[in-house]
Length: 327
Image 1 (tube, helix red, strand yellow):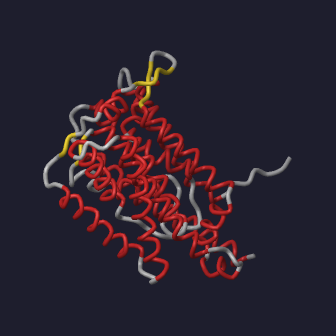
Image 2 (cartoon, helix red, strand yellow):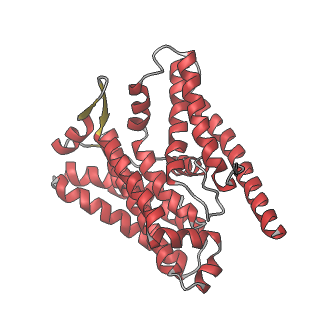
């Protein structure tokens, strides 16, 4: 009988899934009403925009990059959408594709600067963050409410599910983005090239892979996901404001890292990112059911988990490099 071998690449993913299962089981034992399908679906409803954002961020981290502008881009998309819909009275069917193009153009610009001028991704996207926040206040310093009928319907529409439960349109968008991310990462040349760049960029160049084009496309994809998350966030908030999405980039990065994608790149799991977001949702729900703790305990718990997973990734990489040196 063959000996079962554990692939170290998947250890952090397994731990993430077990951690979410443990949190949900603990909440079910501690609090009445926690163990229900609607509680699980509410985690998806409340974090749909974060799932979309984190999937785009997963590809950025897979190539060994970083993007800290996503929260500001989401705020810009919300503000621009609100202005065009409520002030300019432009149709939602024109605004929606226009916002996706704005996000893609923003991501393409950052990717081009990073690749063409060899800028540090942190510096390039820091500039992008300031630019997007600044543009929000050029549009308006006040909150702009969205009263467009289509957005109102998207915000309130409930899709019936079994056992008298429901989900929102935002969840459908998030799950569709998840499936698209899984396909891109696992079944396309684009995904394989992204992993190769994160593993060793010089080797990827020597293998003749389209490194420059793929890096720019990854940031363009991330811009698209940020814009889509901004649209989902608009459905959720029905307003545009310059301070929307503050700190959201850190939530997205934390979700991706907890989901099994190290900051060093080369490894990454879109499925793990989903569970990384759900862990944050489970912690928020546990605090809500507990009733006396401040919501800031969510940040403290995520900070602790982040430290644990970064150390875990370091140990996995050290173990892998140790095996290579022995071989």
